[in-house]
Image (cartoon, rainbow, N blue to C red; front, top):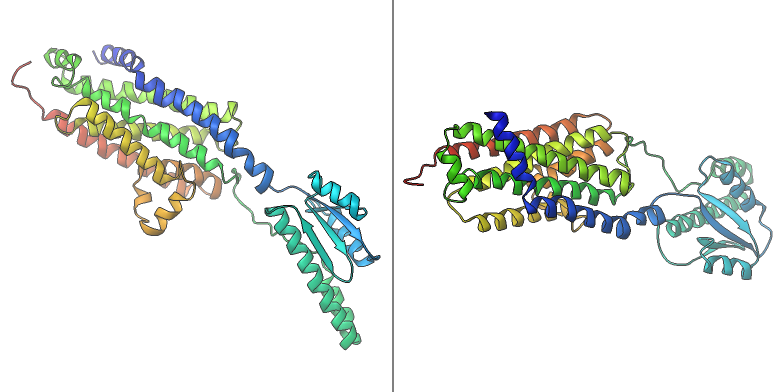
Length: 376
């Protein structure tokens, strides 16, 4: 009896248009937009690569040559110098072949085209070099005996980067939009959860009236509907993660199986939310659908889907809210895989999702169980 109910529940879910639109077509289009508009920004401006710089020597500067040569010999050197004249250097800068021009005179001066991380790093390098050169000059002038010790100390490699070990995840800031996209698909699973209650309430659908007249116990019918919806939603989550990973080529780090697990549990949370809302009162179906879409979009907005730093703003003003906001909890579970070496935080987020899901399901079963009809 249970398997029979489950089979037809799967068929019913596959015919719901909202599933095709909100959980497959819409995420595919939105993900493609994110990829085109946002994701490559990291590689072009934020992701680190060797900075090409032109060097114009108005007078010979052996010290600068030595410093730049030492930098270029390092692994993952942050600077690579091209020695040329002023006219050629300006052409290279105009053609975006270099990120800046260093003019060597009594002090170094810098010309850059625009702003960004590379311009900032070049500015820091020039400032650091000039400061060290000034200190060495003053030491030689005022205390020649101790000048060599000062020179040895300040002649160490100049670097504007500090290496900070992170977990084996994706450091790309813009990947958060794809994490929130997965969370959105999970929360929109509430639409499949809503159809569980619609199809089991006699006052909301003809199918619900027939089910309430059938000899099948309501608990078995509802449980089959719930499991069927979770299976369909799980399939949508697998499609979403696979599309983002293998079609859009978004890097999820070395924890892809855990990403699938987290996405699947997030889908269960979405279904349970819809099941709970659908069980409340005798509100019309279209009204419940509108409520769920509004709640889902608000949850995703506050987790950073539309505005990247929104979650940080919420954390500053209502830190407790991010711990119960479904979309925020789901997206945070992915961030935990990127930023933490252990799995304690990830497990905490998974347990939070399961607890919230269990509460929604329990409340939904209690409210459905108490419904009776005078006539059908």
